[in-house]
Each structure stands twice: as structure tokens, then as C-alpha cells.
Image (cartoon, rainbow, N blue to C red):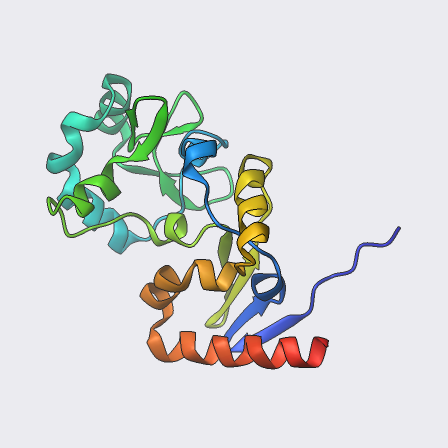
Length: 199
């Protein structure tokens, strides 16, 4: 069986996989318990600007971090360069993001919790907010957006299908945060046109 490569669409100078329009997704925290914060072999991709925002927020979240996370940050800072050459948040024991905090049996982002409680101006890295969309710098000013599949997010896929919620609609706020209102409006137009042509 040959796997079909999903078509690539262009929206406001950004190349996007059509799966962002066609696949369904909705985080189901009650079931997954925030496992994306503690699974994987690298931290969340960050920009230099985001590192500055994280460092500004560090005093506000320090008490929520584990002793192990505090030790890692003391030794290497809030971010490091991974094996692929990407700048990512520091991790504990080769997997847990240093900004993971726990509430009962659930994992939470200490940065996001502090932001929602009005303690900081920085929420969390845009790469976290955009998941399951992965952003890739393609060079020469080109940006690509792909839909990423991860076994730990199967509950989110099932919930998205039950709600009939496309990825791009689930991620409306972070997409606007990253690319702006006008870009998102264009994305919606492209999605409607794509649905019409598909039918």
C-alpha cells in the first residue's frame, strides 16, 4: 500500500499541509493528563526572544519547579541546543520539560499557569501552543506547517473526531498569536475552498 503525500497549500506566504485542514484534534487533558510535557527526547523548540521571556518569568515559577528541574536550570539555563541543532527548553532525566509542574496526577506547564494567574506576561513557547502543528523554517524566508502525529495524543484525535473539530480551528488562538488575524482569516477561506474542491 502506497501512502499518499498530503497536498501542500500556500496561505499568506506560509506553506501548510492540507492535513491541518482535514484532520480532527482536540486536547483531552482529563485523559492524557498533560503527558506531552514529559514524553519525548528533547524539550520544546524556542526562539531567542522566548528565552528572554522565560528568563523574565523564572522568579515567578521557580517555586513550582522540581528540585531536579531547578538543578538543571542552574547548570545549563532554561534552554539548550539539541542533537538536531535546534534551540529547545531544558529537560530533566532526558525527557521531562523543566517547566513541568504537577497537580494531582496531571502535568501542567508552570509558565502557562503563572500567566493565567496574572503573575507573568509570558505564556509558553509558541511551539507548545501550536501542537500538533509543527513549524519548520525552510530557508529563504519560507515557513512550513505540518500536522504531527504522536501516539500519546490519540485521545485528542478521538475527541477531535467526536467534535468534528479540524486542527486549524482547535488552534485558532495560537495561530492568530503566531501569524495574526488577517492571516488566520485567509486560512479559513482556503480551508472552505479546499473543502468545496474536495467534494
